[in-house]
Image (cartoon, rainbow over all chains, first blue to last red; front, side, top):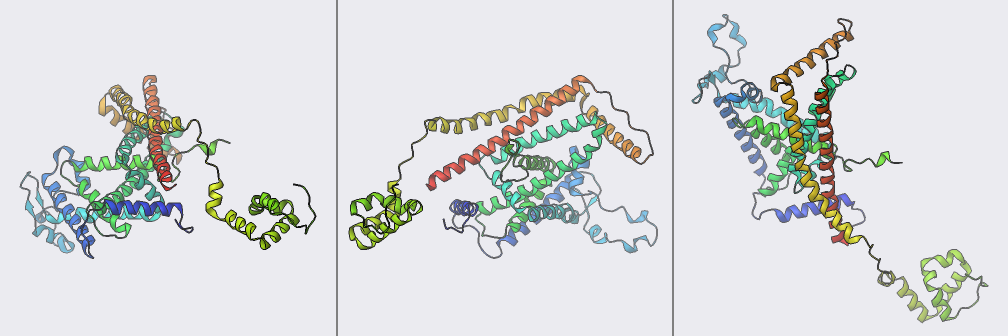
Length: 274
Length: 188
């Protein structure tokens, strides 16, 4: 180890070397591999969202719709006043509309799946990238913990414990008057922590795919973009998507709490001992 | 160290006795004239110069270091570093049982999910009333009547979950520290 190299850099080199050795020989390399993979994940997401809309996942109805958007396209034109369709921009969508082959819901359009990607999917990607740009070191700490041998299960169990702790705290605050105003603050903090965790999980997914498929080296944000698309694809799986998204949010909450928001030192009360 | 007159020539035997202190710099700090005498002797005596070159070489100095005596609790420390991980891992899963029981009790006590939903809606209503009170548009909301059993169950759930998180945090830290110490050991 050279004198200029910090222990953390050395650790990163060792990690990279280990990943290089883990990488299967003859992986997919090339300039267009990452764009192709990202495009494939996006197309898969659109198709899954469309399947989700067409199946109209009955047992999670409104919640499922929150993930993929409205199932049925705009109301019929004959209900509108004459001339009110001057600014109508749904005609291209309606021209592709068809009836769901699975359930008797209204007209659906393949473009509704694209809409799900461009709204919820894009928001998820932007939030994940923003978190990684603002907190790169903390995200790295959390992702390294996730990549440990038992990282995912620790994250999931810790997420369940955090969720129970939060719910218990919320119900306890309900019985107070002074601290009642803390309830929205607590919910906002829990949501922010879960979003941080989901961003870290997206980066971990991207890195996992990079190493398992032997994809060439790329910018970490590109890997996390692919990882965020994987999260979106999981979230729009018919019937199971919402459950998968909830599990990811819980695991994200857990990994953020266990690592103290990705801190290098973790939880320590040494500062209180003097 | 005894004071010696500066410039006095030293014998080879005396220089070799002082060589270690001279190389370490202790001699110059304690008696600079003696160090100067040793330096003069080393520059003129081939045998002593060879001895000096050998003394300042890194392998020789490393060889001169004594092996550290391992602490008596080394084995016990290693075993302690390994065993709690497994125990804590079991505990991490086992704690889900009391948590699940407490959640089941709370849900049952609140008359199921409907009771939970009404508690949530009551919280939102109270928040709205509190907000209106803040702008002078309403009275303070009344503090809901708390059931002792429910409060005890909620506090027990909070404590159990917090302890669960502490166990999980230590579990992760132990894994990390074990890996780091293993990597450090491999480097050495």
